[in-house]
Image (tube, rainbow, N blue to C red; front, side):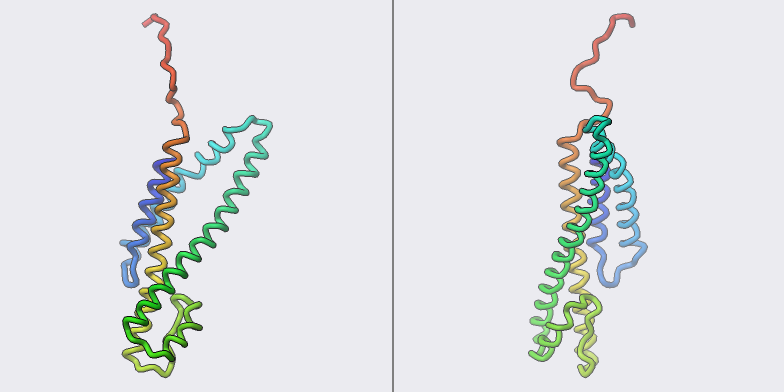
Length: 184
């Protein structure tokens, strides 16, 4: 569990480094591969810990609770990551518009366009140079939001690794010494 969560944390750190123009094979693919490897080391042991903590007569209930918690945490994660991405995106977009000294009309336009995130487009009647700069700003702001969501995921994965390290006993290690019979 600790190793798997650590792999996932490293993977999210790698993904947080992905920018607007980074190479997929050098940045994104290794991160996604590491998530797969890390989760492979986590899913079955988590299920074993959950089911091993109850008697066999309660295994069905434990399995149901385990699955319900997994589904609920997925929904919660989607909501939290949505908040992290949009908050970061909006902050970066606002700072970029301010640094560019965008006109009030452009700021008003992006107030309605920002909900599209990376698909937001500059006004059609805008000067081509300014439109290109705004398009780059939108991509950069979205990349910033994605990076913050990845770093948030990394922190959660590290917290998971720490909790597992502190609370889950390692199989095969006994706290009491094994008594020798003296017949060596």
